[in-house]
Amino acid sequence: MARKDRLEQPKVPRGRGELPDPFYYLNNFQTVLASIDRRYADLLSSEERQFIAQFSALPRASGALLVRMVMRQGSLFRLSRLRYPEIGETAAAVAPLLQAGWVDASPDLEVNQLQKLLTKAELLRYFSVSRPYRTFNKSGLVAVLRAQYPGSKPFLAWCQESGDRVYHLVVASLCERFRMMFFGNFHQDWTEFVLTGLGIFAYETIPVSLQSLAFRTRAHVDSFEQIYRCRQWLEAELALDEVVAGVPPRIANCDWLEERRQKLLFQIARAYERSDERSAALTVLSACTHRGARLRTIRLHERAHEWGRARELCLNAQRNPENESERQQVNRLLPRLNRKLGVSGINPPEKIDIPTFDMAIDMPSNDYAVEYLVRDRLAQQSRENTHIHYVENALVMSLFGLMFWKAIFAPIPGAFFHDFQFEPADLSSGQFYERRQSEFIECFSQLESDRYKSAIRQCFAAKAGIQSPFVSWGTLSKQLLDWALWCFPAAHLRLWFEWIVRDIQANRAGFPDLVQFWPLDQRYRMIEVKAPGDRLQDNQRRLLEFCVSHQMPVSVCYVRWAPL
Image 1 (cartoon, rainbow, N blue to C red):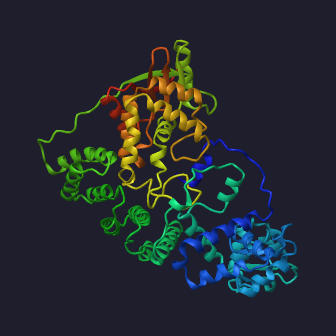
Image 2 (image 1 turned 90 degrees about the horizontal axis):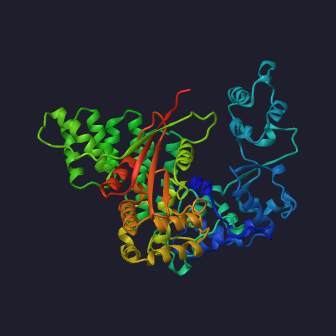
Image 3 (image 1 turned 90 degrees about the vertical axis):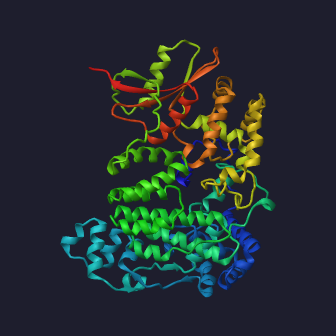
């Protein structure tokens, strides 16, 4: 789950408060440096070791100012905007940083860099701008100034009447490397310490002695940083050939990092494909083992009318599919390729009919979700002993997360690197289940009796609010949990859980929108809602067909707007 997605999750904080130490951010930065020095001393460059040693000897105000700059956006800062009560006079605090060469007090700036530091009013004050251009918005004004002033020079040369100064954080990239080495990923940042300190986030405790080293060699560190750089190039739409040239070679003895390299290759291939560079896309895909690479290769051959080659790959995939998604796509592609090649006598897989029903509803005058409309209508039509909830993926995935908490957070090698992980590093890999098979088998065994109910309830109480890649604390109330454990048969839970572990990445989504419970009858029904013109997505169809094949009560409600 991406950082943005996780922040949007409903959370149950464990107790919010204020950070009492005004130098909390400095303490956090020192914690990171100490951790890196302790864990990766043998891998650090001379520049990195020297920085760590010199930083510890800085006056507190100077160290705090550096960290304030590190934790802000960009690497250029105006003196007038570096004011912090706990630091005191900025000019005095910055002096040791200038002496160490970590901050430059007179960097050369182009207009494009300068405009990020100045308001439009300041640009008009310091630059000679013809009257017609003075009414332009800031972006238009900057375009004019860039053409008129193509060179670069220090801030005071541009803004001679200003009493301000601009500092350049020279060690920005070095400190960024420390951040990524500590977290072992590209998306977590310094706010993790703050959010945890305030009690907004809580994480499962993995003892430091059981945490793994994210990197074993210096080559791992360099490859990690290069992958990050290539991703930035890809997002900035740099020439794809240059991005490919920057991809590090295959990474040995570091599965999680090699998986990220493979994902990067897949993203590059897709970019080539979108640019209609089929040959280049196929070249990259030929060296890519990321899930979906074989299917993209098949589709590229099909588009090039290379039906024989596409069919050959389809047959290989059909014999040994990488997941249910690929099986579904191949079964859809093969009949089409057979027709193109005149191949007959091969029967398509038997189609599974998914139960459906229609519902006429008045079109809402606001943005009220159609799933809620169906929920409310069913509640009106049903007897009093029924309960209907909008849960989508949250309910079954939360039950899974609680049932297998011990397996998910098992501190196996290469899974946990620090104290701020809400999921194992290898969760998205194809080996997640296999690496924890004994732990999963132990948890599955609880389904053989009613032990699973008490295990889930105990985990719900003990782990409340702790970040999890599966449990949606904002959705899963105690009442909803009780109804689910009462109405879902253990056999159905086992089937769902086996479906999920078969492919964590692909099968964690696609569950129906609504769940309807009849507690007196100890039964349930799950309903996928489709608005007018909407259709089932592939992952939804796969799951629904799986449920129907095992006689589980699921259906699709197709909504139509009632005539006025």
